[in-house]
Image 1 (cartoon, helix red, strand yellow):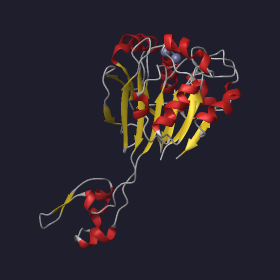
Image 2 (image 1 turned 180 degrees about the vertical axis):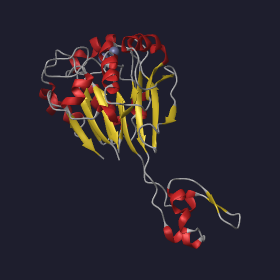
Image 3 (image 1 turned 180 degrees about the horizontal axis):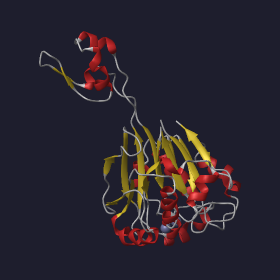
Amino acid sequence: MPTVCLAGTGGMLPLPERFLTTLYVRSGANALLIDCGEGTQVALAQAELKLSRINIIFITHAHADHVTGLPGLLLSLGNTNRSEPVTICYPAPAEQAIRGLLTVCGELPYQLILRPLPADQAISFPCPEADPFLTVSTLPLQHSVPCIGYRLSFGKRPRFLPEKARALAVPVTDYKALIDGRSITLPSGVTVLPEDVTAPPPSPTVITYVTDTLPLPEIADFGRDSELFICEGMYGSDDKREAMEQKKHTTMPDACRLAAKAGAKRLWLTHYSPAERTPEEYEDSLKALFPSLTIARNTSPLTHSF
Ligand SMILES: [Zn+2]
Ligand SMILES: [Zn+2]
């Protein structure tokens, strides 16, 4: 099951004591990254997260605070003797910006797979690069440039029921195939499906990451029943709401309202304005809106294992 680390929580500009927003999600030997602003590789190093695990990178949109760390990160990955490919997913209209950033990387010792995603329609797809049971879903957001949110749904391996396999006369040598999700055919010609010999799978663990957007009502549906809802909170006070609507951003109180509507189990705020030096000062008023809130302290990454 995944371990998540919000290694940076800054928006717009990095501060000496705060890295730009980036989420590292590890599952077993693999990891994925969401957003990669300037200095992300330093943020990951400080949080003691291994770059070499990253197989896939998701970009929300082509603003500098979300993408300009890509060349440095990819070059550092090239220094780790990596030969496995790295996939980069991004909203399709960001293609030119992404390709422009990649031109400064020169020749990398591994393959880069570019995967543009629709910015005007929600999609879902499996993500075996990070976890064999992971499904990623997207949501078009509303920002000053095309931007998408990501919902990570970590399915769980169903529990194998050997008594059912025995009752169907499945040879022990075929158990592994069924446990791995493959069907088998018995010598009698009967096909046994994995679901014939497993308990119904437990509900998936859902992590939602939404930043740089108006607080659209559909975000609550997108984040429905998240174990962890990670949402932009540019400013802590509702007084900034109108200004943030003009700039197409979300305030901390609105992030709390979205998390409550989504029925999320816990909320982490991210993408603070550089003007908000101590977002923890809002903790009490925000917890009145959503009690299971954690506000990252500037220098320490937030980590949780499921
Ligand atoms: Zn931003
Ligand atoms: Zn932006």
